Length: 84
Length: 414
Image (cartoon, rainbow over all chains, first blue to last red; front, side):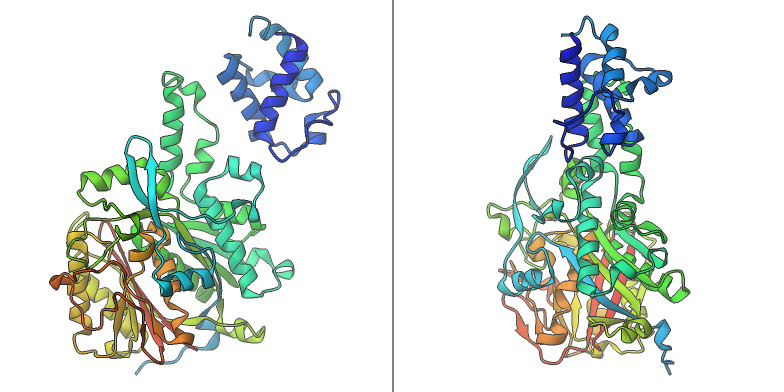
């Protein structure tokens, strides 16, 4: 899966988790929490959705990699290389 | 001789918020009860298939965002809607209310079944691998969830908890709120009951296995307490929350008062898991009347608990005959015949459906009684059409539940 496609996946997950948010203006380099109302349970939702949809595991010590869109995509790219 | 309590020990209802299958506020609900309008509809739920239920259609987005709905429970949403509506209705200056002095006491018949069933259903798609079990499961299923969601939504930092009391829970929530006000634990109580039970297949399946799930080709006629052809319970959802205050506080702010809690009682059958015990029910009702400093013939309306089961209705009628046999004025009615059994909300909703009688002097009917069961015959059972009964001063509300939990609440007109 390409970086662009991974970004689309994350946007899709975020639209489920934060349905009241406007995601079109999301800045990739800015932390999610500075732009969206997300708490720890929401981040666990991202982890769970990646696990459910793509069987991708994000261990707890790596949660910090999901800070922004940019860091998330960079972190997931090698893990989701084989994903369709 | 009954001593008259001081004004700071007298508890009054100053606001009401509700959603019922046939109305989303006090006025709509009463209008439906007087018009004979049922809220029961055809319904389908996984595994059980086609059945009947009382479903509410309030706008969940009135007081919540879509994200809140995704995260929380239906019981939470019902409670949030009813609690916010109650506060608005009370006319209290909520922005300047000290939320640390507000208590939230919500009665539930059960909580967590809906969320657990949903999660297991989801997990089936992952071959029951528990790494796919949601982290939302615990906060959704803790017993205080409905009350806690209200506290989160309304910024209430006083005490909150749920009261698990089977189908006596609506009364139990009200009683708990009154007790906490009297103890000085809070200055304003949001108290009542909620139910999301229509979303658990288990409750339908269990009643069906018990031979106690109502069936009828016309959904609106399925809930028929006291009718000889009744064949069980119609499960319903709903919520009703009262703003309770001490009379002294309500008077000081010039609040409109729906009525005063004149007396209440709760007791236990200690005799059977499901079959009610009329002797214990009668004791409970008598105790409430005695605590109110009244005699049975001073009660104008009894809102019965009867659910439409073959034995339960008969048992309650036997209890009521024990208490009210000498009373010619007392009228009896039943709101479940309109909306089904709203479980944790039932007691609070059914009481509320009668409160307008303090103003209009009308006892709403029991509908769907085509042929009265002789074993359920009570003097002054109001069925078919509503009845003008004149000046109503005292309303008694019965709510009973499984494991032999009994409750009776008496509200006085002020």
